[in-house]
Image (cartoon, rainbow, N blue to C red; front, side, top):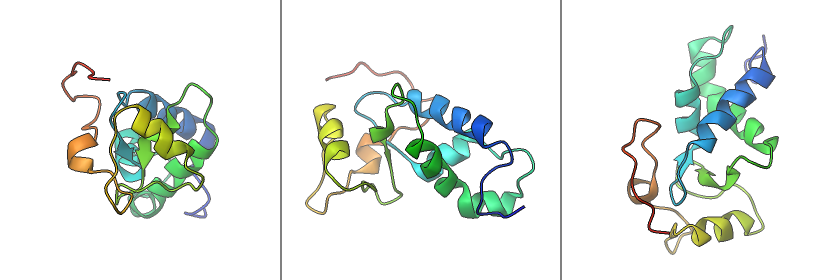
Length: 124
């Protein structure tokens, strides 16, 4: 298997990614790598290959996501938007997410800890 191609069952992987992303609360963000860790190792993929390419595979899933997936809540490991055009930033700012002067989101402040994170009342 070409480790860069995708998991053997790309459809199942994409659905697992979208399920995790749907769980990110309004006003919070996660990284591609974090989503890959939450999804877990796909069947038939070597752990080293997944560590190397899992975040990219999450990016591919996000590029194909259905309308009900809050795609804007997934950022790169630096807290930066990976897309050009400004739509993602506008959507996040409308949820109360703030960007610094370098266009980064403070992942400690706005980062989502995962599905086990205690539920918080939304301020927005």
